[in-house]
Length: 222
Image (cartoon, rainbow, N blue to C red; front, side, top):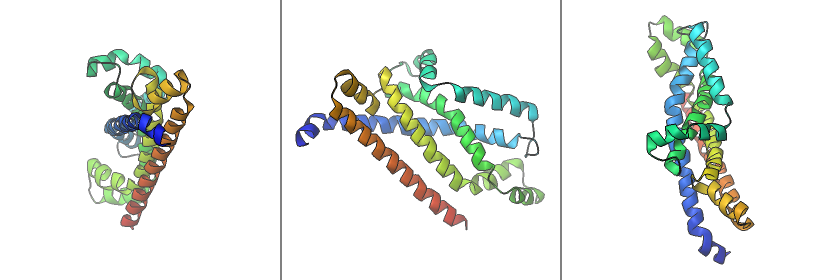
């Protein structure tokens, strides 16, 4: 074990850091895009705050189309856009672009689901008091749905973490790249098993942290 850690420990540590970097950055940008998308999907439904059936139908269809694209196909398809945006199509930073584009529609649906859990009676009560749609969304709907949003955030983060392993197949770095290079190409199963263990640990830690945060947020609302 000590010999294994001495030889591959720095590589595994670097791969873990790259995976966390891609996951954190992609999750941030995915929510930067997906949160307003989810709000739009919710408030434009019939009977909602700003009903716009045609817009909702077209926008919802577009979100569904983007969600249906397999990640590896999307990653290859947006290579020219990635190269134009960050100057390269390989490496951890380049991987953030397809990860964000793939996760944003998923995040939008997660946000939509969380916002729909807000009690309609609360929204109507605030609306009758003269609150604007912007105030209702930002001060009521988003605030009331924080526990659900946090649980959705854990699912989104873990999903993106899984996608980072796929980006390793095209030279993006991270634990997925280590598993491919050593476990698949060089038949060093011990390295592949180590990357699997690290990924499982990361998933467990992320899930536990967000579950704790969601419980705290839920208690603070009561």
